[in-house]
Length: 455
Image 1 (cartoon, rainbow, N blue to C red):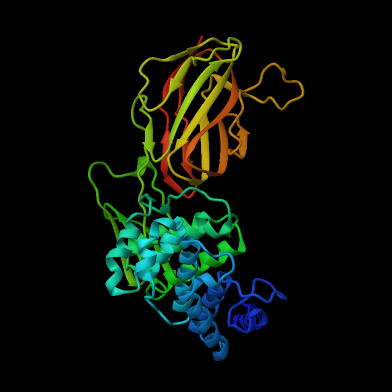
Image 2 (cartoon, rainbow, N blue to C red):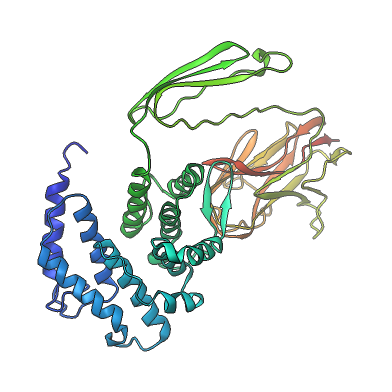
């Protein structure tokens, strides 16, 4: 960013906006169009308001004429051609109030009508209404009522708005998450809650950015609002001790070094009860995560921790609708018995009750089984696994496991299939299949572990 001149870029953008402003003070959708757009104009007001807040020069007359246009639009949204329904008028009034607030004029006009018609607004519109209500002391009860109706899926690491995934960028998951983050800032949510919502927003990125330019703008606006709530940049040193023994020391100064980690092998852990101690000296906020990973004795049961996965084993040579074995949450006491030299269809069923992103599916192979790669030209065309759900983007057959990935899954049921051949007689451990989120690994599902006997 060293070569990025924010002042020069902003000046050019404001000049381009001026070419779109119409005599009535509103803004048209594109150059050459001579009619002001009632939805584009409030969005232009948000941009000009952000410029004013940042100390970037904006023509006063340009702002005053836009304020007059938005005030007239607020008073009479029906002047817009084709806007005869109550819903359309409510949407225009809400957008006008948001635009005026961005320009420094926070108004309560028609808030009673908007709140009465709140059920007609879409979910993102309701979030925006809650944001505007939260600005006024006498509307806190209504703002809290709307905010409490927003479905949010929360884990120890992140919080994600759990709305159906709509078509169109104006109501995308990124926009919903960004609006809820800003609403939570307006309501003075706890630092922990804001941190989780921010983590959920960051997890929606693909290759470092969000899907569209509009998504990027809304996400960055929310992140700027979040950053303004933070204390001064970190400048502190953290030390970690376990049972009185130093494990690590990390200095955080600015944002060049933002994280550190330390791993202790189980064989080196102290016996019995011990204390894990973290100390911080200096200014700044420290977030930390501790995890203890181990394998319990025996064949453990499955886990349902936000996601669910089930493994089904079918015989390819003896096709039937019923599976030979099904492994889910319940612990498996008896060994699974398969004949050597046969091919089996291994099916994984993944269930989520909320939209998830960056989904990793792992299915370990026991030593007695070998994955069949049906992509080889020499493979038997009669051998074919059942079809996978198209939402699962990627699958890789490994020597000891199957890996799959889905960029995004809405609430629903998804399946993944592959072929495996029983090749080595003997008794083997078959670890459970697992589905988890790349950036929130604590949200996972796992099938029970079993013992496999190849005869």
